Length: 547
Image (tube, rainbow, N blue to C red; front, top):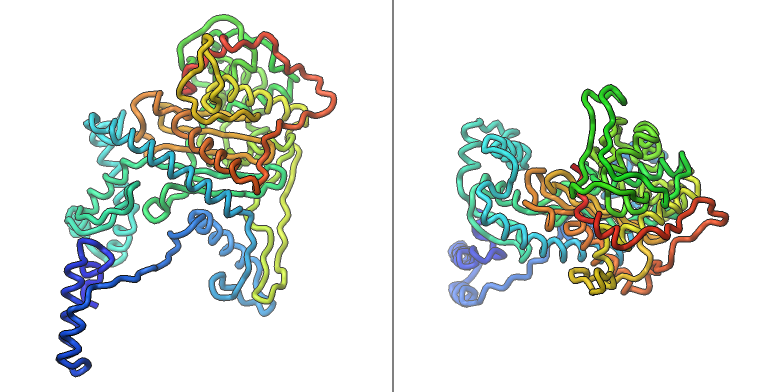
């Protein structure tokens, strides 16, 4: 085959060349006696018809999940050989692997990510037209060059050339030479001509996103969306990536205070700057976090403080319970990444995976009982013999009462806090507010999160039988929206959750709960805060940034 890419009939820009090449082949067949001249002339007059339907690992649903599953299975077969001592071949031995993914929920999750991200990307593209350093902010030219050089060295093309012994100068020349390629766009792949270096810069403009959904009672992972397109963006935002979690970590601080001190959501604390002095917890200088809206004064209930993501209260609480106790609870709930027990974790200054966070939040929804996430329920050989049945590991993390109190606090976030846009019936000063199109009326516990410079947007949303986490951001932390309006978690991540859940609720066969979370018997902690007012929450809502 002569230059199969240049003459690829499936590429529009190559269609005419492909037709010419096909006719050359017919001429060669006639010349070598495989066709008569009459047959050649007849065949050359026929139009070029294409019936090209290849499948790859990047096609179909759950592509990121399937890649993760391959890694899990490769590890499993190493530790579970056949009776004869040979290893199973996960591709050829006919193994039947039963997974927890629900194809319907997976479909809705992928659709939700695509719908929101295509829309969000259009706003980001528009903003970058006036950004001289597009798509980056907050860094200089040297740092930008460093980002692009690292991306080049991490590319498959670079690895192939390096493995083939190509010199650095020749590699640089290849990366600066224009060639025809197919690149991603939200309107479909585009056949174009650009240099590999230009394509690296092109892809830096795209925001990424991930979604994972867990049934808290079983630990079954029901949906796993690791990115916006597995072929062009293969790095998995669910399990591989770890990003700063922002305010979504605050519930672990509040949970520690409630579980350890039996604090009521109605207990009031002063909304004033709070300083943890040098030396305490190993601090090398005083630590006094600012509120994102720079508003201070008065007393706030714990419920109001979490709903408004008030940093001064989070700082006070972590000092009351000590950072190491917060880390201990977070670890028990499912956070596996080591966390330094520093006060700044109260504001989410820690990098964690989306899977870890969603799993840990599931502990709250499951009455304080941690159920380890599962992706496989059973493995059989080609004859149907069960090789392994999987059961989840469980651990009690919180009392049922403490978990319920946290759920009640997190319901406040969606009823009158930073997650208010999930509701359409929210009123302010007697008027129906605009910009809240999702119309959910059922109980939802959730938390938004936004990190420094709007680099990461998070939303963790829970109903009784489904916990879903969403992350959105650029590949690099310097790729982000300029301002908080478009850059906050409530704008970047929450809409994906809302679109996803609306689709799930439309499918009645899924039985996704619209009920309230079950209240335990004999709740002794007061959760009915009659003094918590909507007006107070309006005053403190602002953004939900952490620094």
